[in-house]
Image 1: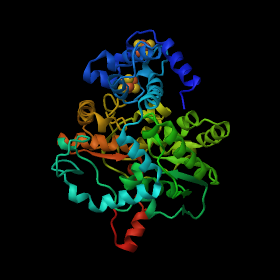
Image 2: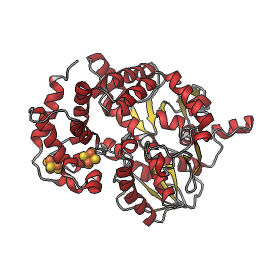
Image 3: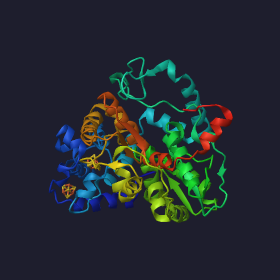
Length: 440
Ligand code: SF4
Ligand code: SF4
């Protein structure tokens, strides 16, 4: 299969728009960390141009420069010419996969992600035996590697959250009913809320229930494919996207709700761009039109405001894929400020990337850590007790940074604060009381 003319046209169109002004240098987190023109949008676009014109080959060095991007969209939103540089880099990654093949580790991981049952069982197995390889971190909340494996920063005392012993979806019935439903929604959990942060997923369901909204949690859903298509493996991504569309299109629901910024962006904008048949694109568009981030959904459809007082000083971190990807940034702040007792402090650079960037932090932990240090400093200066966000990957990366710097500040998903403010029992509390179990 060769790259379509449409893909080349898209890249050429974006390249032609660039007036080489260098505005992207002032906002690119990677450039701020490494100070190299070859790693900022302007420089990388010139490299792409040279490759398309045949003046430069698809070398490992070029491939590396294409990988050194967080896809944070800061350059695209600051660009006076509207150059969507991040889109160009993803398209070029596809071209690189076509020319050079996919890295063996990624090929293995993406194949693993395709087989939901094997993926699910291996993570459950990993959760049971995780204490053999990881111990409680000396600082912060989470775990660190017992053996300093030189992978993904695990040899640098990286703090990671534990895997859930029981993934969220396995704890839920397929339909969570309420007495007098005013709406019915489907919950796309994403992998991280399912396997790492079921606390946030439970809160999301609790908040919907407390607002008389029936929730369907399809057990058959799979990864949203963001790590796959952003690595250039469009073919595997299409298989997962088509599977998810098949699972969700048959549901008679008013909306699809997500609590993950990248999953939401994928459903809303990227699925229709990646699919390649008219029928599939039409189906994806129909579903994308009714997909909402949970904060956006609550603001749009109304929510109970009989909150109890929560005396906390909090700040909010904007996930790149929520603010610049979906234009959702007022909604979470509005929800937070609606809770009595909350003292909200806007941090400096709230919408600057935390340095996670999906798999970027696994491949380039040191750069990612440097970017995260600035975020942690801004959080600390806000004097918040809790930093809220709307993305599990940001939550994980910020918690690592805070823990490493010994800052006793917690990181929650915004929906957890709302759940707490409603102050009633959730489904998992009722279940725990019946089972006497604790799944986290
Ligand atoms: S800000 Fe936009 S137009 Fe200016 S150099 Fe960067 S990509 Fe090109
Ligand atoms: S998407 Fe972010 S990391 Fe990538 S070039 Fe643009 S500003 Fe830099």
